[in-house]
Amino acid sequence: MTFVLGLTGSIGMGKSATADLFRQLGVPVHDADATVHRLYHGRAAPLIEKAFPGTVADGTVDRAKLGAAVLNSPERLKELEAIVHPLVREEEENFLARVSALPIAVLDIPLLFETGGDRRCDATLVVTAPAEVQRERVLARPGMTAEKFSAILAKQMPDADKRARAHFLVDTSRGFASAEAQVRSILVCLAGRPGRRHRF
Image 1: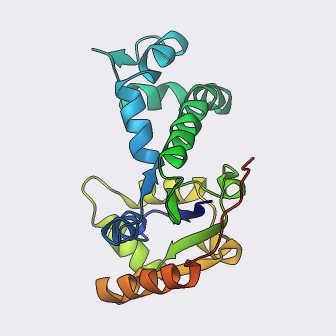
Image 2 (image 1 turned 120 degrees about the vertical axis):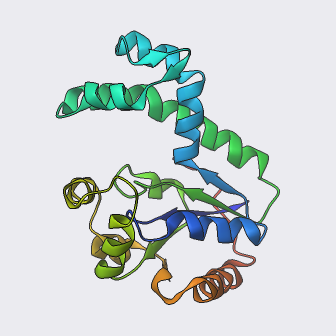
């Protein structure tokens, strides 16, 4: 069975770049965020429009309008998650079925621990960097402010807690070559390890 590695990391830690390293080394990666983006252009759109009228235009979810609809409303956010999460899980299961003959696959899930996604993985990897590096990277993004950054961090499990729960770490603060070497080392470590047959 395919060994399933869960990949996560807080904003600005280099998670997407690390996921790309796995792809470049021949490991298939399922990107939960990209899946949501596709669903917002596809089969999730009519379901979301029914629950949140006025948030879909030309068959595509308007993220700004949807965000405003669930802002400061945990109940409405749960309603949205009840629509989207099962569809994302279905896509994830289809992905794992497609790669079932391969030794390793990666599930790239931003809120891996927060949503219990780690229970569907054989091991977890947290992408990390010192707080000052993270802050510098995030605040350099277009349109980002210190207030937005703080709000995003408040919704994510603290980096220290993620690191404490991880089987593997990749520190991206030391440059691309170092991150690639860490990823290669993890793949060597996982080589030949069997995955679980059943996932819950």
